[in-house]
Amino acid sequence: MHSLIIHMSTSTQRRPNADRLLEDLPNARLIEAVDGRDPAQVSDVTVLPGTLHRPHYPFALRPAEIGVFQSHRRCWQRIIDEGWDHAVIVEDDLRIDPARFASALKLLAPHMRPGMYVRLPIKPRETSGEVVAQSGDMRLIVPRVIGLQCVCQVVGRDAAKRLLAGSERIDRPVDTWLQMHWITGQPVHTLLPNGNAEIAGEIGGSTIQTKTPVTGKLAREWKRAIYRARLWAHPQKG
Image 1 (cartoon, rainbow, N blue to C red):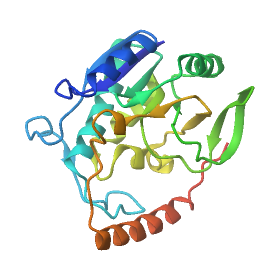
Image 2 (cartoon, rainbow, N blue to C red; image 1 turned 180 degrees about the horizontal axis):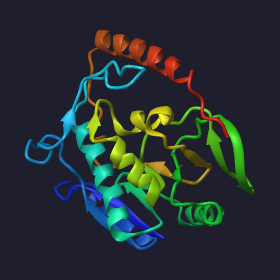
Image 3 (tube, rainbow, N blue to C red; image 1 turned 135 degrees about the vertical axis):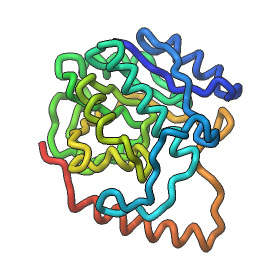
């Protein structure tokens, strides 16, 4: 098993945690994150308004979201280039429980295939459509609706190829796009609980979230609720 840690070398507050992940994850290496605020780094990215796929995405992509999407695409390409069957991909604000993480990988090992994408999320929000495997309180499931965030996942080589081919043009954040399995053609599994935690607040805050006025926040939440309701019309099936 190999591991890729998305980290921007200028993010000095996050470097200690990135170094900890280098020690805690199997065969880990850093992958330089794409800075979406730098026009030179995203000059080859085709960004469209949220009308590329249905349901339409009601928000404009922020530069940081573009950078995160391209950073994950960079990791998918690395898996292909290295010829790995699969690899762990994490963001540098992840904290793992090494013992629990090892147990999660042990549970996953006999089931992982190059065509699989498995989330190890920090929040147990998904409802199971099928239980694939279980050990103690830990379960590998096919969630009905795929959760948000890409803090930690295991991605197979064939899945990486499929996702790269499907994301040459983007119109929404990477985690939101991955929810659309009927568009990507990529089923997504989830492994919970796994001991993972997000610690962005301890190391300088989120690189994506921005402050929104109260009136704008209410309108945004209303649009988000409508969008989520439309996602429920496309549940994953085991």
